[in-house]
Image 1 (cartoon, rainbow, N blue to C red):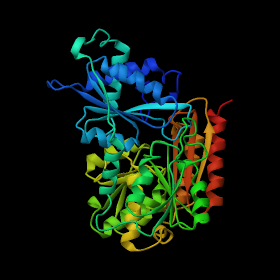
Image 2 (image 1 turned 120 degrees about the vertical axis):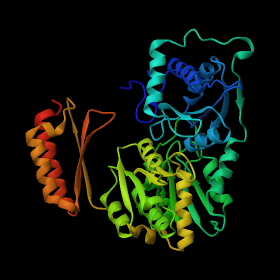
Image 3 (image 1 turned 90 degrees about the vertical axis):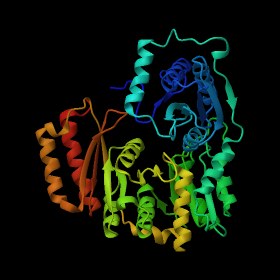
Image 4 (image 1 turned 180 degrees about the vertical axis):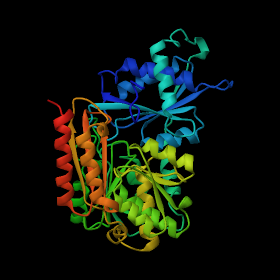
Length: 452
């Protein structure tokens, strides 16, 4: 079991374990050791970050650790997570490092790694890094003289990524005449994203593009879609686009200000790709949290869905294993594997805009392809993580609800990965009915393993 790495790298409050300079330096040393091949060339690791104040501190520690192992560092500064994955791959670096806590508040930070091919590390490599830190095996490995690593700043990294994003948009289309409200969440995409949409011809109303180190995700970005909703109505825009702190996820709203989430974006893009014979094996990869309305929408056009555990890394793993090219999460992590190796908020927004342009339809009309089923989520704070199906009263209640729902709904119960919570999620045709059933199951759980 991993102790340091979570579902998306190492994360926590900056300057408190594990997000300290000491840990960052040791992670840098471990990464340099693991990614150093036996070739004679000098090895290079890309480091990028979002706009958090603590990014400077952790960046310096990572650079020190990597260089102390005889590996060079390529610094790209603030750049979206998918941009760092892309730069790592295009520059033939040995690995990439992202300093970001994604959608978390500014006082948090995180460190995650990409391998040379631009994909997030598998669990076994992260576990190997943890063991290196515990064993102190690399403590004595200290290159000297000319073998010590150097750090270089890549000044044109943002420009390279902008060109890459523009090239992902169909060359026969442009965004001329479209008015876009764009909220960058005062995060990593504050320079890149407006440039991309403007250079493709759109009129952009930029929000959340004045980071100060402490305002990332603060009342803006994909966590607060109400901001773009109001701005779209105020400016009579065609679409609102909201990114999170590291721009690997996106939430949009239509021309009336109605939110369109990750499930709906996947439904729109997947049905369009099926019509153009571009969706491999007519299959979309989503997580268990995706709404059943997505399943129904895909079935109507001859497609199907494969579900994975929660986490975009598991979606990508399934896509690579099965040879699929579209996947994502309801939260807005969307992976277009023909274009990039990880979730990319700006790229996903461009693919959605391409459908709007290709079909010459407003987003509100396109979104009608999926009708979400009513969904209820109830959280129960627990004192222990017991297998819920081993508790007879709870198991019986779940089975009873599943029988009542039949093929027109579902029950999903799982423990939180970060908190002592049991999440009880029900979907069905009647919101009032499933709310009652969810609360009944929650009450039974509280009686048995609820926090006292």
